[in-house]
Image (cartoon, rainbow, N blue to C red; front, side, top):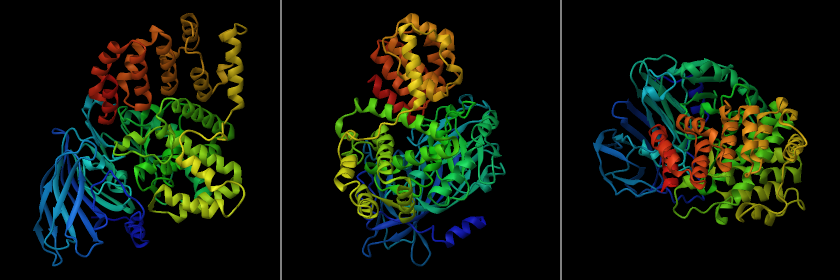
Length: 614
């Protein structure tokens, strides 16, 4: 296999070493990490679009931690295991005995492999199944090009086990290499060095020389073209969306440069983007070297590029410094949301950054009213639940507000020093909330005494809801929107008098999100006529309008809403709408739309919406 000079230098620098979180207990893995850790994976897989499966083998390089152990336990979910081979001390390969247990509803099936000696390597021959929760298979008609099939992965939180037998926990880190074979006219890419994928020939080699948690192993394959944005950034996308994506996200290099200056040098070489089909269930996924991005943020005016800032910020928070368990998710997402906003401030200015803070804080406060109190803690207790349940605005925005609180108390200079030191200390490591609290106490609270107590920090982290003195970001721009809205609602102004021509998408979202939920149909119609909101091409603005319209019984939206729900699968933009439709007496209509849309949704979105109709 070929290796780039960058890959070789990173291997020499020690990035191939597998770090293991010392204090972590992850209830969502079967892996026997105290006995053995997989320090390197090699994948050799065929992409079979006809049968919707990946087929081949994964080879684990093993580091034994227990001298008497002879067993390797891996996580799987809906995998067919053909055979297991292992390499002994003499270099010879032998057949290994294995047992695949019954499937657990959350964790999948425990794969236990027994060796006659401590194996150097273990090779598992397997294939995924079409229902793999971490893969989506799209037919040509479900793609932008309409000519080629498309396949992509979503491994977070514990979906890597649905396409790789692996120790599927963020408590461990591993390097990986891969050979991926596809039809000759289909390009494969991975969360790795993609330089060998520039030539489209159906046979692709990849190298990820830095150790990453398994949930960051990612793959995509389809009718993908490639275009550079800068010396360090590029986009892979279907031809139909490539140029628009480049134009939308060409500030990515500036974001990298600003973040380098604030928090230390970007550690991953290149930072490229993969534009996915609209069925992708998330806004983005921070797969290292190749963030996966939804096309719903290609708005034509860069109004939604904070998503790129968020995924880029994960290159420091999450990918570089990782939560050791999914109960510690806020360590990934709270820090990332904070860094994202700092990037936006550096590149686009303080006013825009504050508007985004205010929108997010308002969304959090609204969601806190509908979440069970125990789930509003940063250090969440899942108690056996699926770790996908950890994903709400709490780890993202409550975590961000906690860090904003600390910044305000200590001043930006001191707090930047702390954050930069934190990233350096835990670089390429995973840690628990308890370890973070210890670091916070030593390197910020005690270092600068009398400002924030340890008890206050623990209130933020371990207690439900928001502390009474939590930051409440406000924007002068939003205050002006509120004043104009109030004047229109009272009849003192006409819609034509509102200064909407100068509004950013953030001001539009604030306007729509704060209109009364009992607005008259006459006023709804006038809004629609004045601003053509039902046919908005900005996905976020359209979503806010549809939510308002469903709640107010404004029927004119329904043909456009049908198209919205059928053409995209991003959970943020569809799940609340299905919930609202059911709540407002439109269950039968919503069920009919969903029956039509469901085949095009990712399994993660299917599961979430299925639960609404149950």
